[in-house]
Amino acid sequence: MIQAKIAEILDSNQFLQEFEVNGWVRSFRSNRFIALNDGSTINNLQCVIDFENFDQEELKRITVGSAISVKGTLVESQGNQQRVEIEVKEFKILGDANPEEVKLTILSPKRHSLEKLREQAHLRVRTNTFGAIMRVRSKLSFAVHSYFQQNNFHYVNTPIITGSDAEGAGEMFRVSALDMENPPKKEDGSIDFSKDFFGKETNLTVSGQLEGEAYAMGLGQIYTFGPTFRAENSNTSRHLAEFWMIEPEVAFCDLDGNMDLAEDFIKYVLKYILENCKDDLEFLDKRFKTEEEAKPKADRSGMGLMEKLHFVIDNNFKRVSYTEAIEILKNCKPNKKKKFNYIIEEWGADLQSEHERFLVEKHFKCPVILFDYPANIKAFYMRLNEDGNTVRAMDILFPGIGEIVGGSQREERLDVLKSKMKELDIDEKELWWYLDTRKFGTCVHSGFGLGFERLVQFVTGMGNIRDVIPFPRTPQNAEF
Image (cartoon, one colour):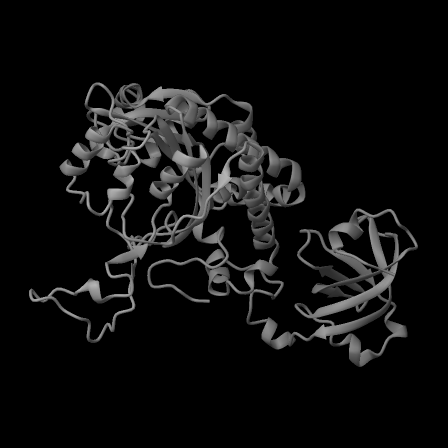
């Protein structure tokens, strides 16, 4: 007898072979047909039971949500809903699920809202939607590592606890071992963090970029892929307090090389998903279509889920300067007729998602890379252009989502970097080690950051970022 996963059995041609399979009951119809799922695929395995030959009390325990083990023979299915099925010879209840309690959970056959599913995040992965999302997320994670490892990048684990604010935003979670009810104080009444565990004020990281740059200066090309944290009190469908970031850093690489890398990387991982998650993507594509049809016509994306993936893979990314993009947006109909929520009036405006989507979906009709942004709306570490007004920054814009990647050529000149830090009141003492990398063999180098959940959102078509991470962390919510 072969013990196998349902995904393997559904693809098998070993008819009349005996199999043992474990899983959770999705439905039990007519006291005869068990739909069994073990998480290996979105598809259920039909197990046909001759109820007259089994103990009736045991049969009553086969309920939605219960875990069972089935032994039986693989045969061609008599019905047209599936190719194969198992003729059950014996079964064993591994874990009961009380039908009355199941009715109160999302395991009930009744369709539930995404909000309800979030309330039971410990169970939602057993639904088709979230099973598909999490399998896609897993494959995407593997594809990320696969791409970088195949291209001779080194995986670096940058610190989760840090004393620096890479983004300069100040929205960080403090890490402290001090007694919050009676913290040590300085003479001026402020908290004395020199008495804390690390001897200084520390936080959870918002980015591994700065440390990644340091390692790129020795290993040539590295990538980080780890958790990051942002204490932005923003309760929207686009924000999480805890999320994962992919951040490559490459020595001897300018902005053009950085854009080449980002485009090649994104196309690789999307192709990988199309090839390895067909069943889940087909399900999610149908779900996306249903969701879109329920929206007002003006809010629909205009492309199906699979169409959007091919849109990115099959098109060259259009490279456009920020200055050119501003002129296009200033003169476009939605701006002139004040259809945008944020009207573009002058150079220097910080682009919003509606502007980014217009450029991708309406104007260029392909993915877009914007570059050379105004220095005053970008971070201190981005390389200043010769004009003194713009920096070598780049953002990649996708349909339906707007910005998905942000990156830049880093400022390698020590004097310019120190000058920018002084302008922004960033303490040189805090980043002495970062400045040091510009003293010992400085060189042109670049990198980018991609929020992993943003990528999963794009691939799965989910409208809320809370639905693409197993247990979302958001303002006022740290359940599970």
